[in-house]
Length: 340
Image 1 (tube, rainbow, N blue to C red):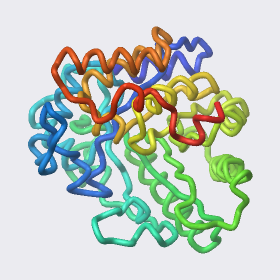
Image 2: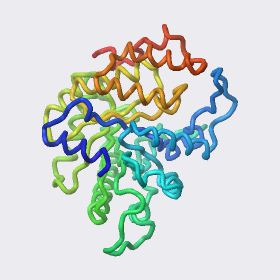
Image 3: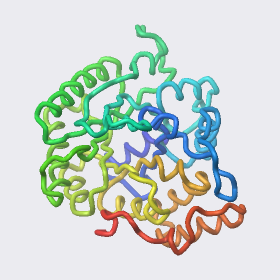
Protein backbone atom coordinates (compact mmCIF):
# COMPACT_ATOMS: atom_id res chain seq x y z
CA UNK A 1 0.00 0.00 0.00
CA UNK A 2 1.29 3.44 -0.93
CA UNK A 3 1.26 6.13 1.76
CA UNK A 4 -1.51 7.95 -0.12
CA UNK A 5 -3.96 5.06 0.25
CA UNK A 6 -3.41 4.85 4.00
CA UNK A 7 -3.93 8.59 4.40
CA UNK A 8 -7.09 8.62 2.29
CA UNK A 9 -8.48 5.74 4.37
CA UNK A 10 -7.88 7.60 7.63
CA UNK A 11 -9.37 10.83 6.27
CA UNK A 12 -12.51 9.02 5.06
CA UNK A 13 -12.89 7.17 8.34
CA UNK A 14 -12.98 10.42 10.31
CA UNK A 15 -9.62 9.78 12.00
CA UNK A 16 -7.71 12.57 10.23
CA UNK A 17 -4.74 14.20 11.96
CA UNK A 18 -2.49 16.86 10.48
CA UNK A 19 0.18 14.30 9.60
CA UNK A 20 -2.41 12.79 7.22
CA UNK A 21 -2.46 15.98 5.13
CA UNK A 22 -1.50 14.93 1.59
CA UNK A 23 1.24 16.84 -0.25
CA UNK A 24 1.73 16.32 -3.99
CA UNK A 25 4.35 17.57 -6.41
CA UNK A 26 2.91 18.47 -9.82
CA UNK A 27 5.60 17.79 -12.43
CA UNK A 28 3.18 17.55 -15.36
CA UNK A 29 3.91 20.93 -16.93
CA UNK A 30 5.15 19.37 -20.17
CA UNK A 31 1.44 18.78 -20.92
CA UNK A 32 0.86 22.54 -20.88
CA UNK A 33 3.64 25.15 -21.13
CA UNK A 34 5.92 22.35 -22.40
CA UNK A 35 9.66 23.07 -22.57
CA UNK A 36 9.71 26.02 -20.16
CA UNK A 37 7.90 24.01 -17.49
CA UNK A 38 11.13 22.18 -16.66
CA UNK A 39 12.23 25.40 -14.95
CA UNK A 40 15.45 27.40 -15.12
CA UNK A 41 18.79 25.67 -14.69
CA UNK A 42 19.89 27.79 -11.73
CA UNK A 43 23.45 28.35 -10.57
CA UNK A 44 24.17 28.74 -6.83
CA UNK A 45 24.43 32.52 -7.31
CA UNK A 46 20.87 32.58 -8.68
CA UNK A 47 21.76 33.22 -12.31
CA UNK A 48 20.59 31.07 -15.21
CA UNK A 49 20.94 31.09 -18.98
CA UNK A 50 18.78 28.15 -20.07
CA UNK A 51 15.95 25.86 -19.02
CA UNK A 52 16.59 22.41 -17.63
CA UNK A 53 16.81 19.60 -20.14
CA UNK A 54 14.38 16.71 -19.94
CA UNK A 55 17.10 14.53 -18.40
CA UNK A 56 17.84 17.15 -15.72
CA UNK A 57 14.12 17.52 -15.03
CA UNK A 58 13.72 13.76 -14.59
CA UNK A 59 16.71 13.70 -12.24
CA UNK A 60 15.06 16.36 -10.09
CA UNK A 61 11.83 14.34 -9.98
CA UNK A 62 13.82 11.27 -8.95
CA UNK A 63 15.53 13.20 -6.15
CA UNK A 64 12.19 14.35 -4.73
CA UNK A 65 10.73 10.84 -4.90
CA UNK A 66 13.77 9.42 -3.11
CA UNK A 67 13.47 12.15 -0.46
CA UNK A 68 10.21 10.36 0.46
CA UNK A 69 8.30 13.38 1.75
CA UNK A 70 5.62 14.03 -0.88
CA UNK A 71 2.75 11.55 -1.14
CA UNK A 72 1.98 11.90 -4.86
CA UNK A 73 4.20 12.63 -7.85
CA UNK A 74 2.11 13.88 -10.79
CA UNK A 75 3.68 13.37 -14.22
CA UNK A 76 2.99 13.12 -17.91
CA UNK A 77 2.54 9.55 -19.13
CA UNK A 78 5.74 9.77 -21.17
CA UNK A 79 7.87 10.84 -18.21
CA UNK A 80 6.31 8.21 -15.94
CA UNK A 81 7.26 5.58 -18.51
CA UNK A 82 10.92 6.65 -18.43
CA UNK A 83 11.01 6.76 -14.63
CA UNK A 84 9.37 3.35 -14.42
CA UNK A 85 12.16 2.03 -16.64
CA UNK A 86 14.48 3.18 -13.83
CA UNK A 87 12.16 1.36 -11.35
CA UNK A 88 11.93 4.61 -9.38
CA UNK A 89 8.57 3.81 -7.79
CA UNK A 90 9.05 0.06 -7.29
CA UNK A 91 9.89 0.24 -3.57
CA UNK A 92 8.74 3.80 -2.96
CA UNK A 93 5.87 4.94 -0.72
CA UNK A 94 5.26 7.81 -3.16
CA UNK A 95 2.30 7.23 -5.48
CA UNK A 96 2.84 8.12 -9.16
CA UNK A 97 -0.06 9.71 -11.03
CA UNK A 98 -0.44 10.94 -14.60
CA UNK A 99 -2.24 13.89 -16.11
CA UNK A 100 -5.10 12.03 -17.74
CA UNK A 101 -6.29 14.91 -19.93
CA UNK A 102 -4.84 18.13 -21.28
CA UNK A 103 -7.53 20.69 -21.98
CA UNK A 104 -6.76 23.73 -24.13
CA UNK A 105 -6.70 26.18 -21.22
CA UNK A 106 -3.40 24.69 -20.05
CA UNK A 107 -1.77 25.05 -23.49
CA UNK A 108 0.36 28.05 -22.57
CA UNK A 109 3.17 27.73 -25.09
CA UNK A 110 5.34 30.71 -25.94
CA UNK A 111 3.53 33.01 -28.38
CA UNK A 112 0.29 31.00 -28.19
CA UNK A 113 -3.18 32.28 -27.32
CA UNK A 114 -5.08 29.00 -26.91
CA UNK A 115 -5.80 29.74 -23.25
CA UNK A 116 -7.67 32.95 -24.16
CA UNK A 117 -10.62 30.92 -25.51
CA UNK A 118 -13.08 28.91 -23.40
CA UNK A 119 -11.57 25.55 -22.44
CA UNK A 120 -11.98 22.72 -24.93
CA UNK A 121 -11.67 19.09 -23.79
CA UNK A 122 -8.82 16.93 -25.08
CA UNK A 123 -7.06 13.74 -23.93
CA UNK A 124 -3.61 12.56 -24.99
CA UNK A 125 -3.05 9.70 -22.55
CA UNK A 126 -4.42 6.19 -23.15
CA UNK A 127 -5.50 4.60 -19.86
CA UNK A 128 -4.72 1.01 -20.90
CA UNK A 129 -1.28 2.04 -22.14
CA UNK A 130 -0.57 3.94 -18.93
CA UNK A 131 -1.73 1.06 -16.73
CA UNK A 132 -0.57 -2.03 -18.60
CA UNK A 133 1.68 -0.88 -21.41
CA UNK A 134 -0.71 -2.54 -23.87
CA UNK A 135 -3.91 -1.53 -25.59
CA UNK A 136 -5.87 -4.69 -24.67
CA UNK A 137 -5.12 -5.80 -21.09
CA UNK A 138 -5.98 -9.39 -20.24
CA UNK A 139 -7.45 -10.36 -16.84
CA UNK A 140 -4.12 -11.67 -15.53
CA UNK A 141 -2.25 -8.44 -16.27
CA UNK A 142 -0.94 -6.33 -13.41
CA UNK A 143 -0.58 -2.57 -13.39
CA UNK A 144 2.92 -1.70 -14.56
CA UNK A 145 2.47 2.08 -14.78
CA UNK A 146 -0.11 3.62 -12.49
CA UNK A 147 -3.82 3.38 -11.81
CA UNK A 148 -4.18 7.00 -10.70
CA UNK A 149 -4.51 10.18 -12.71
CA UNK A 150 -5.65 13.77 -12.66
CA UNK A 151 -8.61 14.82 -14.80
CA UNK A 152 -9.20 18.55 -15.18
CA UNK A 153 -12.27 20.52 -16.17
CA UNK A 154 -12.94 24.26 -16.44
CA UNK A 155 -16.40 25.81 -16.26
CA UNK A 156 -16.88 29.21 -17.92
CA UNK A 157 -20.62 29.92 -17.57
CA UNK A 158 -20.76 29.14 -21.31
CA UNK A 159 -23.40 26.49 -22.03
CA UNK A 160 -21.81 25.19 -25.25
CA UNK A 161 -18.26 25.04 -23.91
CA UNK A 162 -19.31 23.64 -20.54
CA UNK A 163 -21.51 21.01 -22.15
CA UNK A 164 -18.59 19.82 -24.32
CA UNK A 165 -16.44 19.58 -21.21
CA UNK A 166 -19.06 17.59 -19.29
CA UNK A 167 -19.61 15.18 -22.19
CA UNK A 168 -15.87 14.52 -22.36
CA UNK A 169 -15.80 14.01 -18.57
CA UNK A 170 -18.62 11.46 -18.91
CA UNK A 171 -16.64 9.55 -21.55
CA UNK A 172 -13.51 9.60 -19.39
CA UNK A 173 -15.40 8.22 -16.39
CA UNK A 174 -16.71 5.32 -18.44
CA UNK A 175 -13.17 4.57 -19.62
CA UNK A 176 -11.83 4.82 -16.06
CA UNK A 177 -14.48 2.50 -14.58
CA UNK A 178 -13.94 -0.03 -17.37
CA UNK A 179 -10.22 -0.25 -16.60
CA UNK A 180 -10.26 0.20 -12.81
CA UNK A 181 -8.49 3.54 -13.11
CA UNK A 182 -8.83 6.02 -10.23
CA UNK A 183 -8.69 9.76 -10.65
CA UNK A 184 -8.75 13.04 -8.79
CA UNK A 185 -10.66 15.94 -10.26
CA UNK A 186 -9.08 19.33 -10.89
CA UNK A 187 -11.57 22.16 -11.36
CA UNK A 188 -9.93 25.38 -12.47
CA UNK A 189 -11.40 28.81 -12.03
CA UNK A 190 -12.84 30.13 -15.33
CA UNK A 191 -10.15 30.91 -17.89
CA UNK A 192 -12.19 33.63 -19.66
CA UNK A 193 -14.50 36.40 -18.52
CA UNK A 194 -17.78 34.89 -17.30
CA UNK A 195 -19.74 38.02 -16.46
CA UNK A 196 -20.06 36.76 -12.87
CA UNK A 197 -19.37 39.16 -10.01
CA UNK A 198 -15.87 38.37 -8.66
CA UNK A 199 -17.33 38.11 -5.16
CA UNK A 200 -19.76 35.45 -6.35
CA UNK A 201 -17.31 33.57 -8.60
CA UNK A 202 -15.83 31.30 -5.85
CA UNK A 203 -19.35 30.18 -4.98
CA UNK A 204 -20.19 29.62 -8.66
CA UNK A 205 -17.18 27.28 -8.79
CA UNK A 206 -18.42 25.42 -5.69
CA UNK A 207 -21.88 25.05 -7.22
CA UNK A 208 -20.71 23.71 -10.59
CA UNK A 209 -18.40 21.22 -8.87
CA UNK A 210 -21.18 19.79 -6.74
CA UNK A 211 -23.64 19.88 -9.62
CA UNK A 212 -21.40 17.85 -11.92
CA UNK A 213 -20.74 15.26 -9.20
CA UNK A 214 -24.36 14.88 -8.11
CA UNK A 215 -25.21 12.32 -10.81
CA UNK A 216 -22.16 10.12 -10.13
CA UNK A 217 -22.22 6.85 -8.21
CA UNK A 218 -19.41 6.01 -5.77
CA UNK A 219 -17.60 4.00 -8.44
CA UNK A 220 -17.42 7.08 -10.69
CA UNK A 221 -16.51 9.73 -8.14
CA UNK A 222 -13.03 11.24 -7.79
CA UNK A 223 -10.67 10.26 -5.00
CA UNK A 224 -10.43 13.95 -4.10
CA UNK A 225 -10.72 17.43 -5.60
CA UNK A 226 -8.03 19.86 -6.67
CA UNK A 227 -9.26 23.47 -6.83
CA UNK A 228 -7.91 26.99 -6.62
CA UNK A 229 -7.83 28.49 -3.16
CA UNK A 230 -10.48 31.21 -3.42
CA UNK A 231 -10.28 32.29 0.19
CA UNK A 232 -11.39 30.83 3.52
CA UNK A 233 -15.13 31.33 3.13
CA UNK A 234 -15.43 29.47 -0.18
CA UNK A 235 -13.13 26.64 0.89
CA UNK A 236 -14.85 26.12 4.22
CA UNK A 237 -18.26 26.13 2.50
CA UNK A 238 -17.22 23.38 0.09
CA UNK A 239 -15.22 21.26 2.55
CA UNK A 240 -17.97 21.26 5.19
CA UNK A 241 -20.87 20.55 2.80
CA UNK A 242 -20.08 16.87 2.23
CA UNK A 243 -17.49 15.19 4.49
CA UNK A 244 -17.20 12.27 2.04
CA UNK A 245 -15.75 14.66 -0.56
CA UNK A 246 -12.06 15.29 0.14
CA UNK A 247 -11.04 18.76 -1.00
CA UNK A 248 -7.54 19.73 -2.10
CA UNK A 249 -6.01 22.99 -3.31
CA UNK A 250 -3.67 23.72 -6.19
CA UNK A 251 -0.50 25.69 -5.68
CA UNK A 252 -1.16 28.47 -8.18
CA UNK A 253 1.60 30.88 -9.20
CA UNK A 254 5.19 30.95 -8.01
CA UNK A 255 4.60 33.69 -5.42
CA UNK A 256 6.82 34.19 -2.40
CA UNK A 257 7.98 31.42 -0.11
CA UNK A 258 5.59 32.79 2.49
CA UNK A 259 2.74 32.46 -0.03
CA UNK A 260 3.58 28.76 -0.38
CA UNK A 261 3.66 28.04 3.34
CA UNK A 262 0.69 30.30 4.07
CA UNK A 263 -1.38 28.45 1.47
CA UNK A 264 -0.63 25.14 3.14
CA UNK A 265 -1.50 26.52 6.56
CA UNK A 266 -4.74 28.19 5.52
CA UNK A 267 -5.88 25.32 3.29
CA UNK A 268 -5.59 22.84 6.15
CA UNK A 269 -7.20 25.24 8.61
CA UNK A 270 -10.28 25.74 6.45
CA UNK A 271 -10.88 22.12 5.56
CA UNK A 272 -8.61 21.05 2.70
CA UNK A 273 -6.80 17.75 3.16
CA UNK A 274 -4.60 17.84 0.04
CA UNK A 275 -2.30 20.38 -1.60
CA UNK A 276 -0.68 19.98 -5.02
CA UNK A 277 2.22 22.28 -5.78
CA UNK A 278 3.93 22.74 -9.12
CA UNK A 279 5.77 26.00 -9.67
CA UNK A 280 6.25 26.64 -5.95
CA UNK A 281 8.49 23.56 -5.81
CA UNK A 282 9.92 23.59 -9.31
CA UNK A 283 11.06 27.22 -9.16
CA UNK A 284 12.41 27.04 -5.61
CA UNK A 285 16.11 27.74 -5.10
CA UNK A 286 16.33 24.37 -3.32
CA UNK A 287 13.33 22.15 -4.13
CA UNK A 288 14.25 19.49 -1.57
CA UNK A 289 14.54 22.02 1.24
CA UNK A 290 11.25 23.58 0.15
CA UNK A 291 9.45 20.23 0.20
CA UNK A 292 10.86 19.34 3.62
CA UNK A 293 9.68 22.66 5.07
CA UNK A 294 6.24 22.31 3.45
CA UNK A 295 5.77 19.00 5.23
CA UNK A 296 6.60 20.60 8.58
CA UNK A 297 4.08 23.39 7.97
CA UNK A 298 1.40 20.89 6.96
CA UNK A 299 2.10 18.86 10.11
CA UNK A 300 1.74 21.95 12.28
CA UNK A 301 5.34 21.67 13.46
CA UNK A 302 6.25 25.20 12.38
CA UNK A 303 4.37 28.42 11.56
CA UNK A 304 4.54 29.82 7.99
CA UNK A 305 6.66 32.89 8.86
CA UNK A 306 9.11 30.80 10.86
CA UNK A 307 9.28 28.30 8.01
CA UNK A 308 10.39 31.07 5.64
CA UNK A 309 13.19 32.02 8.03
CA UNK A 310 14.25 28.38 8.37
CA UNK A 311 14.24 27.92 4.60
CA UNK A 312 16.46 30.97 4.11
CA UNK A 313 18.74 29.62 6.81
CA UNK A 314 19.11 26.39 4.83
CA UNK A 315 19.92 28.34 1.66
CA UNK A 316 22.59 30.25 3.56
CA UNK A 317 24.16 27.00 4.80
CA UNK A 318 24.42 25.78 1.21
CA UNK A 319 25.72 29.11 -0.12
CA UNK A 320 22.70 29.44 -2.41
CA UNK A 321 21.66 32.99 -3.28
CA UNK A 322 17.91 33.41 -2.69
CA UNK A 323 15.71 34.88 -5.40
CA UNK A 324 14.35 37.38 -2.86
CA UNK A 325 15.65 38.85 0.35
CA UNK A 326 14.16 37.46 3.53
CA UNK A 327 12.25 40.73 4.07
CA UNK A 328 10.61 40.37 0.66
CA UNK A 329 10.13 36.61 0.81
CA UNK A 330 8.32 36.62 4.17
CA UNK A 331 5.48 38.80 2.82
CA UNK A 332 2.08 37.39 1.81
CA UNK A 333 1.39 38.69 -1.71
CA UNK A 334 -1.50 36.61 -3.10
CA UNK A 335 -4.93 38.17 -2.59
CA UNK A 336 -6.89 35.08 -1.42
CA UNK A 337 -4.30 34.45 1.28
CA UNK A 338 -4.61 37.98 2.63
CA UNK A 339 -8.27 37.27 3.38
CA UNK A 340 -7.28 34.44 5.70
